[in-house]
Length: 414
Image 1 (tube, helix red, strand yellow):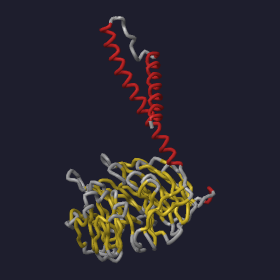
Image 2: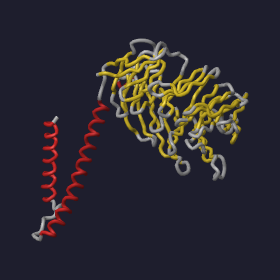
Image 3: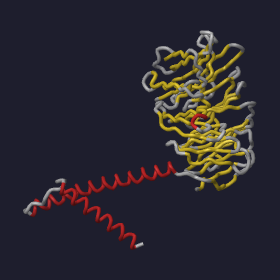
Image 4: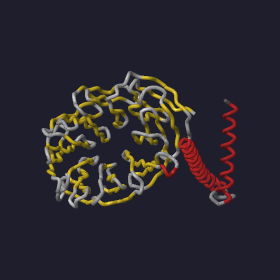
């Protein structure tokens, strides 16, 4: 141990002397005068300067080392995995979501929130025929699709619940727990906005001709704005209209922006964060800047057929069929502003794709692939036992794999 300390002491001493010599050469330090009083002042001044310079150089060296380590981690590949632990038997009807730093599991019988180590935070029972969930930050809404039940949940458990009185086609939640629902009855549809307890804040009635049928909606994190994608056929062929609604106190009118996309279908729209919202078209995407007013920030069209889209609050991506490139699929990742980040090739017949932290995971019932946001393929392999229901990354190279037999924590190995 003493030899190690001596080694590093010698290295830092050498670095200090090198820095001092270089500082004199560039006249960063002042030569000491003959007068002893002035010389003492100059020496103290030089010492302060050399300490500052040395500190800056050490910080730069550490920053370079961190960048090199991160680059190495991005490029690291794995050949297999090992099971760290197997938890209780999983049921194959559950769905999983990230909810802040925790994991939400829900099924027709209830919902549970757990840590990433699968330690239960809360567990609630309910009965829904076809539950769907949406998450914004740590706020959760679970609703019975084509039913009338809504439940709002948070880190501490149940916040509120209510009955809409009409069948729910889709719902969205804000960070504060407010809920927007698309309600349908016959050929009519409504978009209702509620508090977590079910008090109605606003309601918008829609028809097939004006503005169209609401197919997707998303609440801004602050809950003051709502984006809706409508499907209409005013020109005799399917088209879409994107409408942003303003529910803030300072609004002049509810409708803040409306934009038509003739001949284009927009099956999904999403507030990614408090600055950008993205409309995912069947032929590309449009990103809106929603920070100060609402305007189109970036729009891009694709020649390839889109197989699926995935996103979180900072990125979104598309998966394309990629026969011409010699691979099954091509993944393109964009940041929230719509700027291209990376591309990657995938060779498994995936069913689902998602962003998990700094990685993209694609999987089917028996295989899964992991690639970094830099586009490097880190792992492609087959699960040894069971059928994969879902995969979530929990830390570094560890993943939670839910199957029809077990819930396992696995670790990728080289």
